Length: 119
Image 1 (cartoon, rainbow, N blue to C red):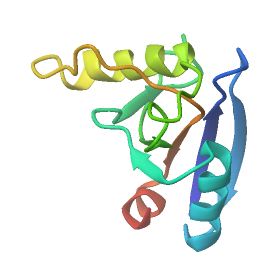
Image 2 (image 1 turned 60 degrees about the vertical axis):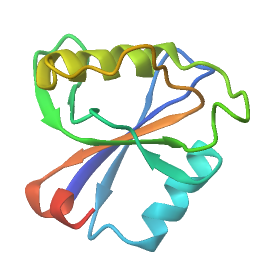
Image 3 (image 1 turned 45 degrees about the horizontal axis):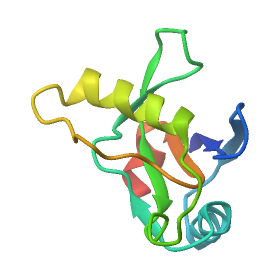
């Protein structure tokens, strides 16, 4: 099982990338928890990502953010918003989420079918 984890840091312009191998489990959940700084919330309608940006290669994905990020007044994450909007435009044109934005760090994971099914 293989996957890629992209961390879109709210304070940096360039995402960091980490290659993952093996079955997703509690260690991965703890790592995501630390990266986003709180409890995990799956970002709705963030189902695909063009990565690297501009490559025209889309991957099915899952994205996570801090579920209390807005209440905690975390920094807006403009780059994550761009990726999220691109996913919505590609996959959810009839039901886009209006007037929402992402804050804090966002973690996006994509990988082979077996990894994603077990995530």
